Amino acid sequence: MSDSQKESFARSSIRIYGRLLGYVKPYWLPFAVSIFGFMIFASSQPAMAGMLKYFVDGLTEGASAQFLGVPLIWGFPLFIILIAVYQGIGSFLGNYYIARVSLGVVHDLRTALFDNLLTLPNRYFDNNNSGHLVSRVTFNVTMVTGAATDAIKVVFREGMTVLFLFGYLLWMNWKLTLVLIAVLPLIGLLVNSTSKKFRKQSKKIQTAMGDVTHVTSETITGYRVVRSFGGETYESDRFEKASENNRLRGLKMVRTGAVFTPTLQLVTYGAMAGVMFLVLFLRGDATAGDLVAYITAAGMLPKPIRQLSEVSANIQKGIAAAESIFEQLDEEPEKDTGSIERDRISGRIEVKNLSFHYPETDKVVLQDINFAVEPGQMVALVGRSGSGKSTLANLIPRFYSHDEGEILLDGVEVEQYRLRNLRRHIALVTQHVTLFNDTVANNIAYGDLAGAPREAIIEAAEAAYAREFIEELPQGFDTLVGENGVLLSGGQRQRLAIARALLRDAPILILDEATSALDTESERHIQAALDRVMEGRTALVIAHRLSTIEKADIIMVMDKGQIVERGSHAELIAQNGYYARLHSMQFQDEKPVV
Ligand code: ATP
Ligand code: MG
Image 1 (cartoon, rainbow, N blue to C red):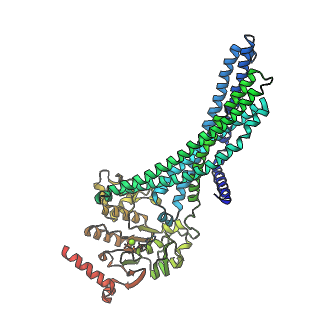
Image 2: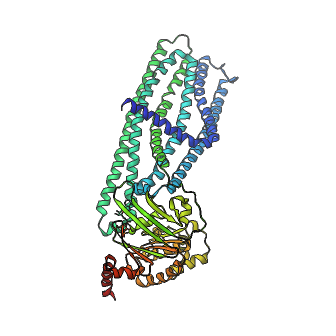
Image 3: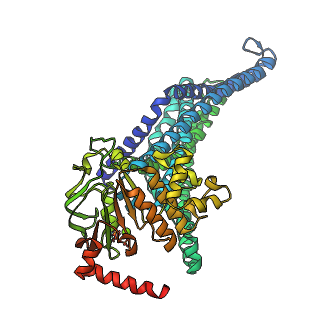
């Protein structure tokens, strides 16, 4: 490590720890109580050693010896009990209140992290895999607990113990004690160099842990594919590798610690040996009791010093974890600079000269798109897979922000709406349906709609042609649908998603392949229902099956990010272009079925 790197390491540690301490601020009172407790605890330590002085001196004096004003034989045991009580109170206050602080901090951090997830732009989720995000909320946060609870506890308790012991030793014999103090810088150097290793290794362990979570969650969610394609060996190998990597990194970290501790012991015991030698050599006029007390107090030093220096591993783990937590917290949230809020919009969509590419790629996904939809009209987007239909649909609720061109809702650029308000006006059924592990009713009435009256939910289900199957479920609308609705069929899931969108009662309805998993009959029913709900609403419908969009006011055919044809069904058929070809192909496909 170069000097500048060293400096930045130290600076970043301090900055991160400082920021972590910022989270401690609200808990200053329990924090103060716990420090007070540890102070009590630590101050009892030299008392134990000091007591021995009276014990040994008393032994040499014989039966006349007094302690605390009573004969030694009573005074001494009584003192031990008193010290134990005193120490116990200190220990309780210290441990309990520091736990209140650190568990509070962890809770706050975890909540901040989770709430932050809710504000991050889509791009962040595109670029980070969910296993690592999950592992950050679960694993990394507990690493911070390590730094916050154990480390702070040890630092205060043992740190103060060391201070009190040194104080006592200096008071007993300052010259001898200087010998002990002389080794402190050496210990400092040792701790410092090991800390750096710990921190680096700890970061790698976190990544390794993220990999383990990632492979596990991917296999769990994709278990059907894993089994049907015989992916067991592949997944097992992948997991084995991730876990093995984790094991090796863990071992490396333990090795660093295992080398460090005995080295440190050697240094402290070396200092002790020197002191012993000097004590014996320069005995002078000290009593046996003085010497025993001094040696005992000095002998109590290595343990807290060792604990103090070992805690640096915990602190480094915590700092490394906090670093990745703060990195996420510092991610820029979804841009929400707009200020316009409307109670209701009419639903006019106008797109002008819109071009778009996904952030961090140069491939142009949409190119010079122009169209306008009047309120109540239905626009259909058709075109080859990958031609940019979903992308266009995703730009309207601003899941990604566009730089070139304009998207206007009721004449106002979407960027100028406040995000939440903008999205309130749009009901969206995405290509990949998402359901939550909750009841059917709560899945339909989700988010802003939570708490909608039961009649409204049933009505929406009816319109989505879902009521019939829902009522056949064991608990009807109160049936749990399982994770992402695994207990339902694909078409049933789609109908729930449509019901959710219908319940939203928004002026703009976007359906991205919303009926692709339905049979012809359900689709026809939903089509009829949609025709009804689409009245007075603007609808943007993406469909591969052309039969669903024949009635659209405008059909736009997309290819490679451009609109290559547009018009009504009849016009496009008459044009005899791409759409007409597509149509005749599907017509042929459907023929044998009839
Ligand atoms: P389909 O009919 O298969 O749903 P589509 O017309 O909806 O296709 P899009 O999903 O809009 O196609 O994708 C258009 C292009 O953008 C594709 O080439 C795809 O690779 C790319 N793309 C889609 N999503 C992202 C993303 N989040 N990041 C980067 N590129 C993306
Ligand atoms: Mg799509």
